[in-house]
Image 1 (tube, helix red, strand yellow):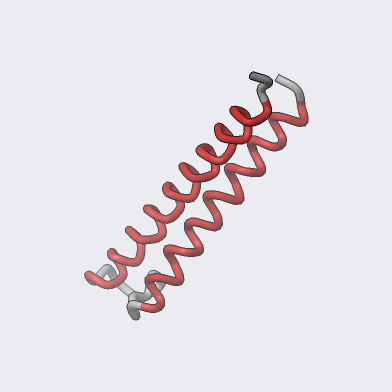
Image 2: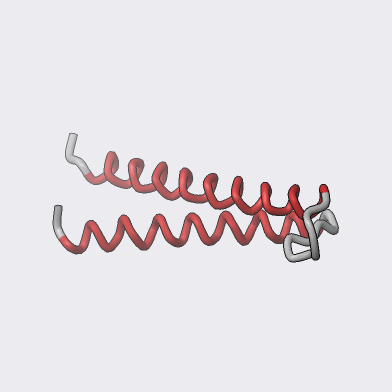
Length: 76
């Protein structure tokens, strides 16, 4: 695999993960759940869960996008 393809894979994974985690964070803020609150109450655990699910979902979407791009790049 070429260095350019590896760089594209790494950058798209990073953007997908961080973007998804940020989306989860802001959804938590809209629900008034504070991930950084003192102690572990139900709201902070829910916010942590949203950030984790958002990051995983964003990573999955980035990999799906890359697979679709790869499929479109191959000649038929």
